[in-house]
Length: 437
Image 1 (cartoon, rainbow, N blue to C red):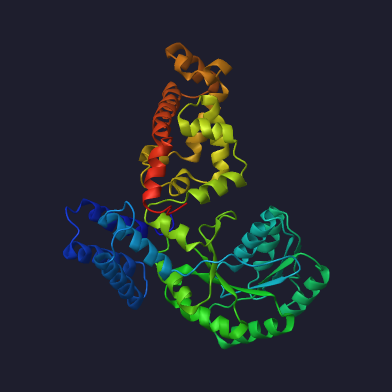
Image 2 (spheres, rainbow, N blue to C red):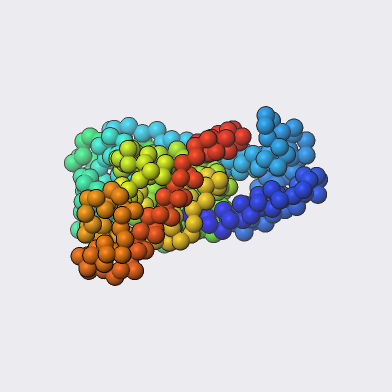
């Protein structure tokens, strides 16, 4: 999960609040102090933290809980709203075919990988992206972007022999006369006058329709300073924050960017090409405080073309080993189990031993299931001792591993029956006004 420490701190404060016998002035003060400590440890600006905690405390004391909410639930709702306000409004990147998108940033921010991630995102939206490598400062940039463009099957242009970035860009623009042209400009090791001068020269010459700043979220509050410097040099339209997976300073980077007025359009949540998300403060905060992101999960499932009938049987707890086999294949496309479970509301608990199943274990499970008969796959309850021995021998695996698969299947079936109680989930979300959906 992005910001595991921040997430556990916020949820810890909320869990303590839920245990309180009464919600009086003292309880609210203790709660806001825990929120303060958590946000400060995430490198959020001190002034912003105290402003936010003051708002939570005042609203918690003065506001009457709306609808069916009690005072504890209302305090959590207020915290959610104030965190969303802290992180900005959240906007979709307005872009269309025929536009030039200039990516700027310092070296090491993840600019080249992000260029490919943006191209992949636009391609999935039905657009026609092109990648142009104009980073002549870092020798490996050309080879890296070329390889990534081949991986996502997007047209690419660059010239490793040319040392003038502007000449490369102009040739690339002549070559690519249509589509969204994503330009990976050169960076430097740090913010300096030479870098700002080069970026300003390119910006004035090519007049891009969009300029996006790539920022490393691990720099924390310094993100605000970098955002301002680049904005002055090339009129930055928006920001993409990288390395958000596990970043202790990510909260500082997000809040610093919001304070500059530059919208954060995307966040990079991992090194892989598909670990890239539109930044939506409401959904982001919803995941942080444990309300999940059902909409995000549905979008990811749709993207990998999940078999809806199989998914429905899995969730309802009425599934066979055959369904489990298909689901394992599809889950590989969605990402790790832990990332998927982060999108589920806190009311749904998944045993840690189910989340810790590694890719190698899933591979073994598939091998074992390949040695089962159709009848066994459809009715795993019939698999007794003699069948276990035959399946183990046929798959070349141990009998203990076959039994482990059957135990995992039974545990998963039991958990999914609990998850399938839609009425419980809907009641939970309705009480909080649809947070996270």
